[in-house]
Amino acid sequence: MQGRTVGLEVVGTAGAEELVKCPFHDDTHASASWNPKSDLFYCFTCGFGMGLEQLLKATGKEVDSDAFMDEREEHVVKLDLSRPGSMSYSDGHYHYTGYLKLRGVSEQACIDYGVTVSGDESKVFFAVTDTHGRTKGRISRNVYESSTRYIKVGEQYPVWPMDHLVGLTYGEYVIVTEGLFSCLRIASVDKRIEVFSLAGARANKDIVATLSAFNPIFIYDRDKAGIRAARRMKKMKPEWIVLTAATSPDDMMKDSSITKLIDKLLKKILNTSIVL
Image 1 (tube, rainbow, N blue to C red):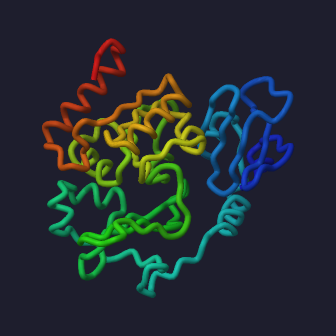
Image 2 (cartoon, rainbow, N blue to C red):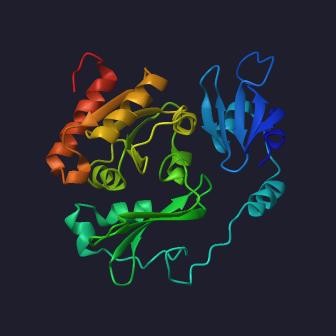
């Protein structure tokens, strides 16, 4: 959806994004950006970032629902779910497999996050969704030993899954893990905080823009890539909580260890003197 449609003053473009004046401060030039494809707003001056629904609520702008849906349909990518192969979007068959049980992932987490498996149970599929809940890509995990562990097809977004962001409130705390299974493990054990994944050791402005409306707590793996990404993220947003996990949830943390971790994080939120 174009920025002007949601009440933003567009003054130019930069790649796929529109350069807009921020409605939340006296902006004399374009300090903010609007992504018409993912419907995400971010101001680089005041630090406000939010999705479409949050933006409309904050600005009090109403959008004609028919025109809104017409424009949404223009961006829908028609996915071929019928053909097998590495470049198709076959979403597998939902059933709770032995491998997912082995990794400590609950059946409810699979349902909540749209996790499916291939017919021969050799691959686990993670559907990549946008903020409207539309499937725009896929990440597949080879269960058995392979030279390629993960295969990403289609569009990718800063965090996974994007459609879960829509149900959050401004300022809510969220956990953001490096790994996909780390995300699923925590979500399987403790539901006090919503959990997302970066799908890799990453730290960039897209992640900051996507999560700036919330209070993210990052948990990276304590390896070279994880430590490097954690340092980049902390440098970009010093006020955010950024951790490296001595024992990653991806390495089969016990349920009690995950609960203890969440307890510490909640104490960290309330009392900054707590040392993790």
